[in-house]
Image 1 (cartoon, rainbow, N blue to C red):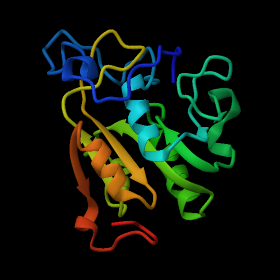
Image 2: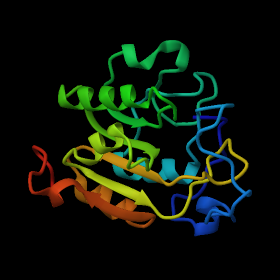
Image 3: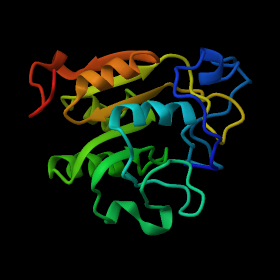
Length: 202
């Protein structure tokens, strides 16, 4: 989401370019991820490069900032005016939902569309809010999650977020996701993958 950024190399950047010089939170130096001004935080290009490396491309961004100048290089975009929660989702999805009370509805929609086999693969970027029901719902789903080291600097933010971030994967190629995203954080899975998803390539 957000203004289009210039394309950067898909190589893993340094921690400073990933998270900004204030990667480790310093009191008074970072702005909240969730604020009264906005609940939309635009995915940085380096993160989109990793998503595309796993998915091979993005068919749908259901939480897009714009049709005319989208931040996420997806084939199809659904904006706030389109009401993505009411539309069908298909193909390979990247979701960076609004960081507000409505986030649980987006998580439920993502899981529903995957379980209905409308989407083939998905990656979701969320806050690492381990105290919330929606986060536990994703974490207990039998797919991997990357808990990002440090604090992400979103494209439309002046400084890094004050809370951690997580990337969740839903799809058959859990090994590829884990190998790509382990470069930026810790990979965790529910029940250590004792009950792997159908058709998962382990």
